[in-house]
Length: 130
Image (cartoon, rainbow, N blue to C red):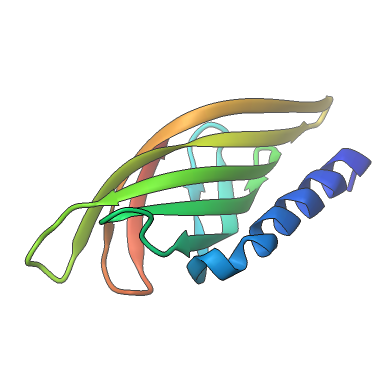
């Protein structure tokens, strides 16, 4: 693992764990990305509501597949009011991604929009474009 990659992962984890007292829960997540074609695994923290139905979620994840990716993001979710046991949400965030290609590496800063459905306190389904 390169020096920059280790530093990025350590700084991301330190930032997330330093903020832990303000957050309601820690969770693991897994998924897939389309471009690059990677399998993703990561950790996310969910804040207590900042305002009614608004939560912040710092996320750290690693992708394996076409290339290796290490990503950190800070997302905000607005949870829609519903009488159902399911909780739809929408939001967006800022991201910092580090990509390791065969011929080098690249770091990109950007944003994303997302939508999802909280299926239970521990499970959700989400789509994110960024």
